[in-house]
Length: 424
Image 1 (cartoon, rainbow, N blue to C red):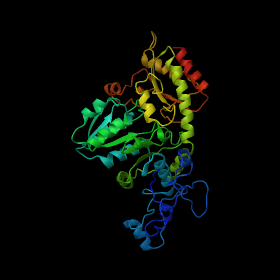
Image 2: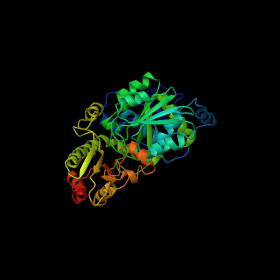
Image 3: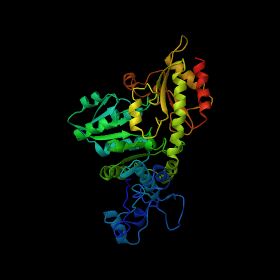
Image 4: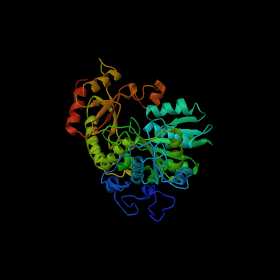
């Protein structure tokens, strides 16, 4: 199991103690749940059992020479909380260990992590090749801002391996995908993309927000960088915003310099919330997946549902690929899209809105990855800024509903969805 910081306690000259010591020795072969509960923590002289929150903007040095050493890099330690913070570092260490990465870099939001990726690994004249099936804000960032600064952007269907191979250009520097994707939970063949990228000296960046390391480790499948919106499942209760990148020490140092210079930093309090969220990540994801599998079966058998986009269904085209890439048994995630049938009195959009508005328990919100089940209409919320053509290319139809299955009693979730579906 990899970790982001060394365990050599004899290295006392250039490394502050709070950067050396870790409450869990990751050189030992601990399981994921143990790592999720204990990795990354440095205990202070107070001997606290739970992780501390370091709400400080700056740090004190023992002398002018000590301060100079921290600033010129001859000593490794805290300089300013825009750069590093002990609470943030605990979260980074723990997430890196869970993803089998050498290092993680935390950001202020998930979109902050994607922006950091762009600024770290792309420059004017480069080509970014991305999947059509992305979160609407990611497409907006790529099209409106990266293109503005001279980065060429193009898109292919995430599941079409031939399309990926044919779209590579001499200046392609990054391939970017979500797997599972937003909002259709489509699956990329990460192993194929890894080989393609390595053969062409391209970085493979995979958004692992929907699966989390509890279900899938893209780095183990050959990805170079993993992206997270920690706001979602890593927190798990919809409390705070944050993001992260995970990968090799070299690649994360490039990302860190962006954070340090650009101020896209995670707050100490948010980092503490995410650290506590990681403790229950695997347990929550098991429960989310169990509920989602049952909800998908209900939806696929309902006469007013035309299509269910969920790889846990045995006839889904990516069912077997997902089973290979996701290491949790029956763990297909808890995000799904489903399309409702229009009727004589309701077009596709009206039918979808009727189902959403008929719920009494499920939360109508664009957030996901929460303990509470959430529902939204992507065409008019998360993807509304895209053109009609862009939505069509992403598979976002007017009758599409995105569901994030929560941790309530699954019978109650199904009953709530049935209110609108039965009355279409």
